[in-house]
Structure formats: structure tokens, C-alpha cells
Image (cartoon, rainbow, N blue to C red):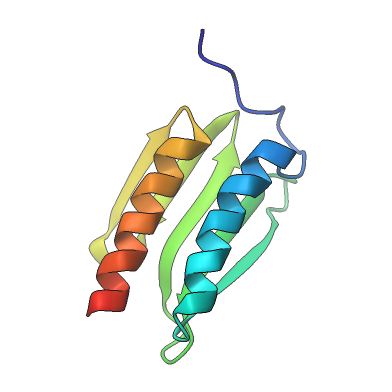
Length: 101
């Protein structure tokens, strides 16, 4: 059975934080990338990965209504996934492409 994301308007869970830590580790190894996490006005958690040089958002992910959303602004692309693993895998692949460029 697929486990639902935590209720709306709550901070990242311990399990979600472990996924975010994976992204944070990759960002620290790429001096051009910076990870920032915060909350929407409604209280839903989000994270962005930015290019320090340009300030551009490379990846944006959030939990909204018990679903995970990932946005790649440069590509004008977004997807919704039911698991944090799904969006983190996409984010890590995008970061890898960004680092290679």
C-alpha cells in the first residue's frame, strides 16, 4: 500500500528530511548550487535549488495537498508525484545535468 504524504501545513517529516539531505549533500559539492527551504503562506513546505551566480532557480519542490510537486523553471516543466522519492530522483538528475554544463 502506498503511504500518503504527511498532512498539509506541516514541516517536512523525518523521512522527507532524509531525502532533502541527499539533495543538500549534492548541492554542497557543487559550489554553484544553494539549497533553501521554507514554507508557503499556507504553511506547506518547499525547497529551491538556486544557481548562486545567476540567482536562477534550478529546481523547486514542494509538498502540497499531500502530493509532491517538482518544477524545473528553466525548462518550464512541472510534475506531481505521490512520493518524495519520485521528486528527489528527478531533482538529483537535473542537478547532475546542471553540474555537467
